[in-house]
Length: 166
Image 1 (cartoon, one colour):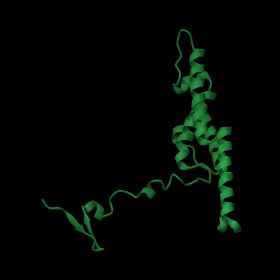
Image 2 (cartoon, rainbow, N blue to C red; image 1 turned 180 degrees about the horizontal axis):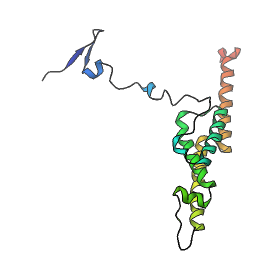
Image 3 (cartoon, one colour; image 1 turned 30 degrees about the vertical axis):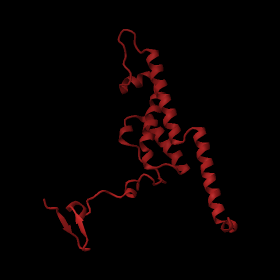
Image 4 (tube, rainbow, N blue to C red; image 1 turned 90 degrees about the horizontal axis):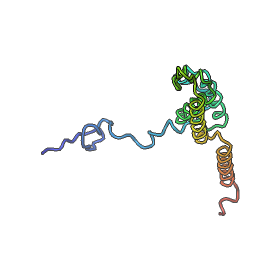
């Protein structure tokens, strides 16, 4: 059995042609390169929300809040989409929910209040969960504010003239 060895320009022997041409496994730091970038400008409404006017308005308000706080990253966009769809479902009327296909109308009785309340309750629960993950509830906002204050305090301590004596 012969092993395939490929010679590179740097006179380094590498096993397999895949590694020789740079097609091997990517580095760990390149995988998260774009997830950590904080978005500072405005961001366009995704195509998945284009047909829902209320979801588009909620998207613009929510992203504006998160961008103003300086903690909106591209990785958060799916959570924001989920939050916007849930908020749109919660604030929509029964007729709008029937048009979207979320709720069906019984020809004999019409729109049932129980199913409308159940749908709105599920949407509200989803809003609470995703809003908390995004930092849109008061407790999360307080927690992130305290973390930022602690980081700023550490930065000030590091720049202090007396920090070298610690």
